[in-house]
Image 1 (tube, rainbow over the protein chains, first blue to last red):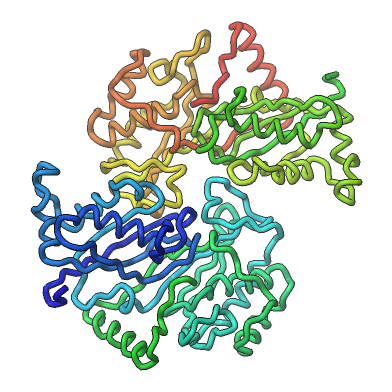
Image 2 (cartoon, rainbow over the protein chains, first blue to last red):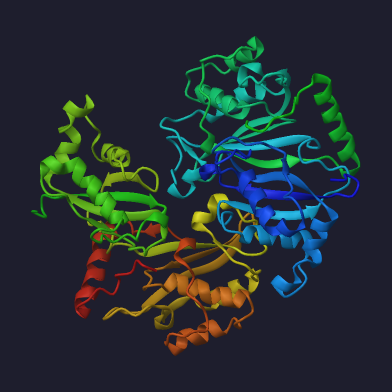
Length: 302
Length: 302
């Protein structure tokens, strides 16, 4: 596709990850990217090859999202088909990107567990994967002190013991900042494990459910679930709070805590800079990648 | 069973109604009562016949509960088996009613979509069905103005248009009080349709989801979903708000609104009087039933 003429759309997406094997497309397996690209192909099939999605956070199997972001590049023919290519079918002019969201949501296979909240023409320089300045996740645990609710069991882990929120908060706060997180990451060939953890805090909601909020420029693989697991060990008094910094500084994987299950994890928001900064941020991120020959921010799967 | 010697337990229960054909036991069909009584039978099988559950709100197929209440009468042999009958199995003395809740939750078939939050010895005079002074339900609608979240789709109805919350609130408020609700009830042979609607209000949560709260001494069959449907018609400006009182006063079923689907409805709490009033309240309710020859408060299924 001629990049100069392509029209980039931004997709805001929410999904219940329970019945998906993660975001990333895999042959013969139900994934969020796979289902969405199939739906796009259905809508655009008369106007060239189905376009591909580029995503902010490549979530693992079972991980959810309420604030996932992706982009897709459409050819002029594909884009204009959204505006006036479907008069015969719909009996009227569809309203471009917003109409595309409605049509994707109406396609079988997407009804219910994945929902396209919005589709808009992307701002100049926008890149869903390389422009973000932060990703924010939440992790939900109904411990022994919480009211367990079967209605939210799809995105809340039920934990058998009581957890000390204050101890978890203190330990979490000590971890913040720019560090090497190798001890909390599943290693990936050539990927850096240096990240800035901007927020890691624990609260209880009205039902007593413990909710962790974690925000970083990017997360390496399994990092959120590892950090949550380490904090849970502190909350159970199986690990002293200070030990979390010690583990991180040792930069070695350890068996002192368990990585928590995917079901409790939700990508809630992706932060992008102001429009004027979008392209510069994307170029900076891409340049870092090229300097290493691999992608330091091939984050997702946290 | 000798009533004098029976020990009555109160069960607090939560469930996702999606995969249940309602509360009430039916042969060959998965119901909440059926699954719970089967689990009770498994735990108590060596100590006589499985006891039966009596419930505060007989919810319809697909309706959820976070605050359902039931009672069960155990024989002395069954009750004492909970305290000391299982040493061999568990390696220690189980802690009576609380231990029973843990054991029920551990039985296959109950994991996940139904959860026994608590089991306690009932206060004297307590009757889950006849002692309540009110039942409270919530109904959740993600209209066009709300953020739709696949994670909560099991208990939230997605509505295609935008709804005027203020108009719905005004109309709802006008309905409160002691009235004949025949226009909003599915008729049941011999059942009264006179009820006191104590609360009917609409709010939006942080995601913009419309949440109705309805409280009454008791609801007749399909009453909550009918009232919500009537309010939705007002919110869509298909019906003037004052019409809801007019419909009620006509005491005739009408096609001016639609009964809303079960999936949005959750029984959130059942109110009981102070302990000293429990028996009097139950006797009063039972006396009313006997005077009519049928059960005026065979509510549930709202």
